[in-house]
Length: 195
Ligand SMILES: Cc1cc2nc3c(=O)[nH]c(=O)nc-3n(C[C@H](O)[C@H](O)[C@H](O)COP(=O)(O)O)c2cc1C
Image 1 (cartoon, rainbow, N blue to C red):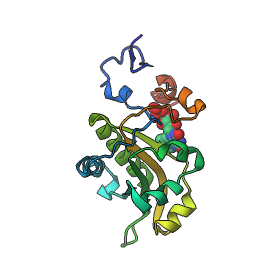
Image 2 (image 1 turned 120 degrees about the horizontal axis):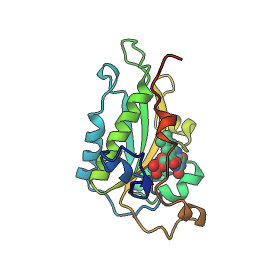
Image 3 (image 1 turned 180 degrees about the vertical axis):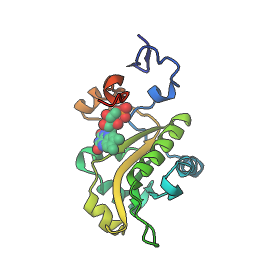
Image 4 (image 1 turned 45 degrees about the vertical axis):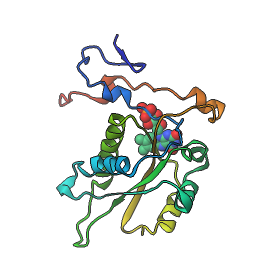
């Protein structure tokens, strides 16, 4: 039984790159700011994600501090506000639904998911942590960030920063502050036999 970062991998898959086990979603962020170069590098990684027809439907809107950050914090659901406001970078991942020529981007959320994961893995390589959030105020994000519903899907928030002290977290969140497990491999990848 091989464990990496407290996570047990499926026997026979020991060649997996450890980075996939090393990424996990912390809630204990340190407020230490990121440099603009670090921020640009994260989004550059996202920029090179694959997408259907190379449509690149993703759009990352981010804030770090000041009134813009206060607004972004207010667009999280309260449960996420309790910890994500500590992270030095908060972004919302949105995806264009189509282009001006009338082409519909059917896979826009899949594409945006690939871009987010590229960012998450780049962050890991830079010694940073990420935490995606579905708990966001979708209606308010459309309205306050001027994202018409006909044009954009608002998908998720992401907090990024250095791992920090968890003493500011509520007790229940402190208990959850560790890498989680997964369903068995056989439940998520099945060789189709035609029956
Ligand atoms: C689309 C999406 C939405 C999520 N929403 C939240 C959220 O609102 N709040 C939260 O604390 N974690 C959220 N998470 C984090 C998941 O709970 C976490 O990724 C999952 O438990 C696996 O743990 P790991 O990322 O540490 O490996 C979300 C993750 C994803 C991918």
